[in-house]
Every structure is written in C-alpha cells, then in structure tokens.
Length: 428
Image 1 (cartoon, rainbow, N blue to C red):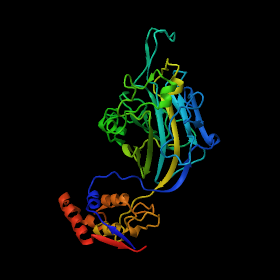
Image 2 (image 1 turned 30 degrees about the vertical axis):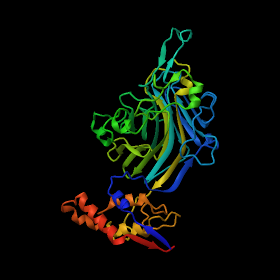
Image 3 (image 1 turned 30 degrees about the horizontal axis):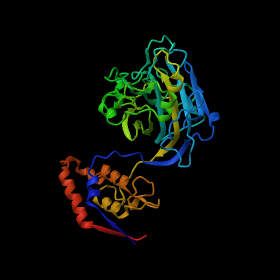
Image 4 (image 1 turned 180 degrees about the horizontal axis):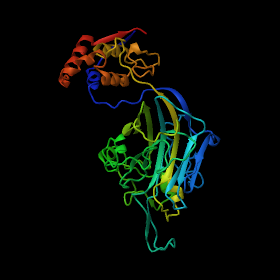
C-alpha cells in the first residue's frame, strides 16, 4: 500500500498557463549516426557547391576539414555514447552562388499526425582579428568576416518527395530554419511549396497569412527569441583551434536571440493541416497547410544548409566554421492527449480525482483510468497539464453560452477538491 499526499501546490499548478509538450507514440524512424548510414541517404544538389558527411565525428577536436570540431555530445544522445557522430552539412564555400542543398533518408514516408525531432548545432564565422604582419589578404591589421548578419541557413522539414532539392526558392515541402548569427532582418523562417521565398512579415501576399510567427517578428531581437536563446560562446576546443576567431567581437559570444554555437532540440509537429516548429520546447512558427495552391511533394523528411547570398567568405577558416550539424533524428506518431480519465465524455473534477489517485505511478503500467493522459504509462505533472488544458471539454461545453468562470472561482473549486480528498491510498 502506498500513501499519496496531495499538495495544494499541485492544484495551483494546474491553473497556470503551462506549455504542453507533444504526446508521442510509436517510433517510425530513428537515426543516431553511430554507424555509417551514408548509403541510406540521398543528397540533392543545388546550384552551388555543397558537402555532406553522414558519419561526422564532431566531438574530437582537430578541424572540420579533418572531420572533427570539438563539440559536446548532442542532448538526446544515448548515455553509452562516447564519440558524437552526426550529419554535417555545408554549402557555398567556393562558388559564390545563391543556393543550397538538401538530404533525405531513402524510401521513407510518414503520414497522419507525427513529430519529427532532431538535435541541431549551427556554427558560423565570426570576426577575425588579423595581425598587422599577416599577408592574407592584405595585412595591415584588418578585420575580415562578420560577427552577425550572416546568410547561412540550417533547416529541417517534412512533407517532401524525398527525390528533389529543397533550398530557399526551390521547395517541394515545408521546412523551418534560422540564420546562424542573427541580424539578417529575417532570421527565423518557414518555407513551403506554396511560398518558396519564405512567409513574410509584414504580410506581403495573402498566402503569408497562413504562417504565424509567435514572436511577431522574424528578427532575432524579438523578445521571444532574445529571452530564450543566446548568448553562447564557442567551445573550448574551437577556441583553441581558432584563437583569432571571435563569434561576436569583443565579447566572444553570440548575439542574444540566435541559435548558433549551442545544441538545440528541434521538433516539427504535424497535426492535421497544422505544422508547428519548436526549439528547446518553445513554439516559434506555425503553418496552416490547408490553403496551399501548390501542393507539397510527398511525405518524406529533409535537412539542408543554404547560403542566401551570392558572396563567399574571404576568411580561410570559413571551411571549418560555416556548417550545420544534425544528430538524433526521430519520427514518432503524435498521440492526442485524453484527460477524460473516467470515460464519461467530459473533463471535469472527477477526472482530476482520478489523476490524483494515480499520481506517482512511474513504472509504465498506468492506464487512462489511472490518470495517464499522454499514454506513456506514467502519471505525473504532464498528465495534470493535459487535464488543465482540457478542463470543461465535452458535456460541459453546453455551458459555453454562459459566462466563463473567473480564475478565482476555479481556484475555489480546486481548494474544495483538496478539502475532500486530502490524502489518498492506492494498493499496488
């Protein structure tokens, strides 16, 4: 027998505006690149030069040209991994042509509701201080490179045919990406077959209204980005490899609001016609695909790297610093959360009591009746969040013509539940 003490704080937490994470089911595809998977991927060439390595050792510290860059293990790596390997992408290092390229796993197709997740690291060339006696390209203590305003773009996407290239201007899919260093004026972007030049803010044509930028801006300076991303410093290994290379002079850190020089956990969630891109659990852009005049190409996933500028860097270190790195790719079925724990077709206080009785089951055996809203076999705060988000759904929607209860009224209801239930017992 196990005693469960219900805390008032748990009830209070259900009244907060919490961000619900996707509820995930069957794994449809996964790749951690620990074994060379090159033969199972296709590379689709764009108009400029590109390079892809599907067995890239990113944890060792030598140089990108040698296949090592001294980056820590990605956050979703298996605990037993000691050498980080991932997918390494570069474009437009030499040709000086606007463009990019993409890669897709061979023969994959994902339909229905699902979530694509991946870890991504974006690296860029900062400002290099050149000694006065350096002969390249002109010496004299010049500064070359940029600390921000770069045009390299790393991205991931879904709904592609998996048989053609995807880059800004040539798209058969839906893909999301960001510049690596900010200050481009449009650092966060979504592209589709219906809007291959990316969805604009302010709205330029009616199709732009299909995209919602939750920051109200595409620039890294917007508070949603600036409050959650950066500044980041290069790794110690990178600093040793490139001692004159600064990511943002003179502080040697990235600007706020950019994704570069850090592992970021990305998800692209497709539910019906709605596709949502989140980074580190924060929803950034949502796209409604129901109105597309130009349909997507298929149902495969993709990753890519582009340079949305026709220039190339004069810095010889660019080959080691301009890249997108991807690891721990996974596609999982999206499972809608269900907080109707007692099966009476509405979500109310009785379902809250069911969650309370089951709260703490953590061995994977929990059922819906125990309070497991997301189907992971456990009953915890995430299930309480689901109940909070669905409270009042079902039969209680008949009350929608009446005034919505004030938060204080809901709090009184919750306090009443505490008074009624105080301590619960569950036999195991």
